[in-house]
Image 1 (tube, rainbow, N blue to C red):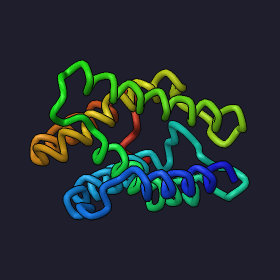
Image 2: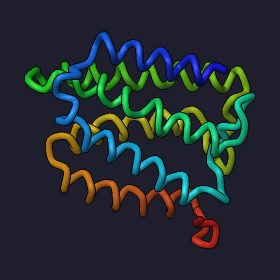
Image 3: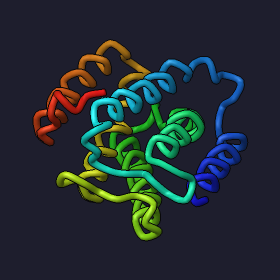
Length: 170
């Protein structure tokens, strides 16, 4: 139930704190986030690093809920409010704020047993993952081709570092 509340809160915040008039400007990065999520979960389908099973159902159902209904408003909120014209320190603090928010949300989910870690994954690795994710969204918004190359390299490194067997790919 916590995930449904999370999705609803994101949509309410997005309604009040996002630039809906220019949503098309953010759509490519929203699709990048959704496609990236689908790819990561396809690659780890039979070798889960984290399991999102909850009272809502299986990992797949919960993952689809987040990917389709939570990530679009999240990206819209994040990019609409990103301090593009500010100093690097301000941008860094903004990224840290979002990593903190995501860490708190994941810690709550972990405490409620709505997320379980496998194959060496843990909250600290999620934090590192988020420190890559949020700048990557900005890079994609500004320079999409660079983001695609970085995502490809990052995905290969992810597979190698976590020893995800190719035979487990869906």
